[in-house]
Amino acid sequence: MYTALYRKYRPMTFDDVVSQPHITAALARQVAEGKTAHAYLFTGSRGTGKTTCSRILAKAVNCLHPIDGKPCLECEICKAADAGNLPDIIEIDAASNNGINDIRDLRESALYTPERCKYKVYIIDEVHMISAGAFNALLKIMEEPPAHVKFILATTEAHKIPATIISRCQRFDFRRIRDEDIVARLMYVAAQENIDLTEEAALLIARLSDGAMRDALSLLEQCVAFSDHIDPDAVSNAAGVAGRDYLFSLLENAADGDASSAIITADELYSKSKDMSRLCEELTAQTRNLMLIKTVPNRPELLNCLPKEAESLKAIADKMSLGEILSKLEILQRTLETLPRAVSKRTEFEMALVRLCTVKSAEALGGDISALEKRISALERAISSGMVINQPKPEAKTLSDPQPSKSDQPKPSDNPPQQAEKKPAAQFERCRDWDEILDRLTVRNPGFAGSLKGSLSYVSGDRMMIVVQNRFFLSLLKASENSTSLQEAAYDVTGIKFRIAAKCADGQAENQPSEQSSPVDELLKKAKEAGVEVEEGI
Image (cartoon, rainbow, N blue to C red; front, side, top):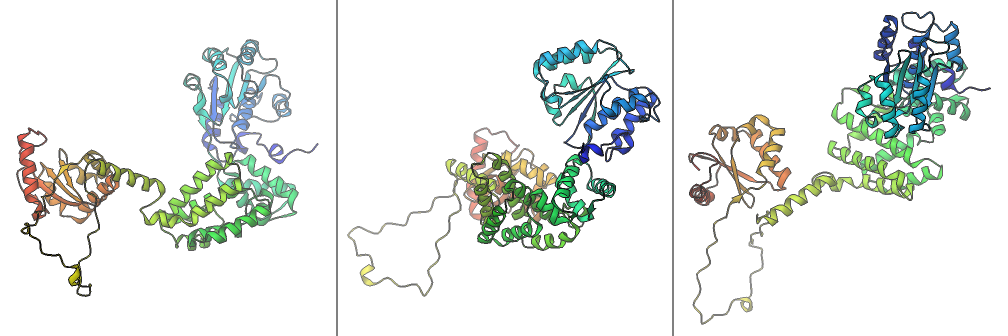
């Protein structure tokens, strides 16, 4: 009977497990010293070796002739365990045996001594699927287990397991398997099976498997059925993902803002039965590469791509700013969330492509959609509080402006000419968002923010007056980086680019507009008469 590759090449001892040395070394040492725990919890993403290590540990604690804590694979216990007919190693699938009655049966059987082994080992896979009542039933026997019983719990979602269960286990977190380890294992399997596999194809399989060895071996097996010679194109076709040319074409369209070409490319992919969800995942992974090129350009090993593709990615990244790339990445992430429940995955993906190609217009307005929503909310708060928002000033008339005709001249009136109304002085109001502005400033410039302790802020239109107790702040404000960080923090919160002036509580001012001196002094005087006790001297 044919055996799948991931089963045929499943590790049989701790030395065969890849990318988990922190776990295998610890388990082997515990077995060698006879200090194994009564309960273990193995967590991690799929295909990282949780069930495999559970079986190896169950063999190791019962092996008749262990070698440095590892099963010998030669004794009758090891051979029976590998054949799957050892009654003292019980594997339970919690996805289908998750009721309280199933756990009660487990508790009753655990009371009986092992038939052939030293320990009776229960391996409970996907343990997070057990119901709340079943967990309560399992808790008692895990708290006070018989001396001959050991539990190994395996799960991909440890956060769903009650803390009372976790606290009674030794927890081991399995890491995603490194790409180079997956490539080495794939090349070994290909050599054993006489498979014509190129190293670039093995690397692409490793990327697509996302750190899961089982997925990588399954994909290799699928590629063998698709083609005798396995290269990157064969992997792409067998996996149902977009070919690399199509993928980079979409990235180019997104960078150039060419929505028409992107839609045409998507139509070609759809007609070839390419999976839209998988294509979106690939596009997300490559957009992440663009982000990394912009952020850490000197670390090519962080990129999730083939070596020859790095130059193409760099050329695309040079066409966009980091903010634009982040906006595109956010669009793709949202699309990945909505695709599974979309009525038409094709339509959903095409909408995402259009957004990717038009994201520049959003960036020109200040960033992604969420940033624009924050700015709009800040402007609405400003308007509701009576603050005056920046208004465009009317352009001054030039000599070329047409002169009014005589018919347009005002007619003389019997009423005497009235004196022009005097423009009222600007009215300053307490800034309601000052605490939030200080929080933002603390993140941007913590040292400068510390000098604003106990300060007050008043605003009028696009002008901001800060009243401080610490005279040192006035000298710090002269530095352009400090004043800029304060302006940016205020802009993030209010959406207004303020002209900032400062005044110390004892009367010394810095960067204060001359026309605003009287209203502010009057405001400070009124605050003092009202008994404001924020800082001495106000």
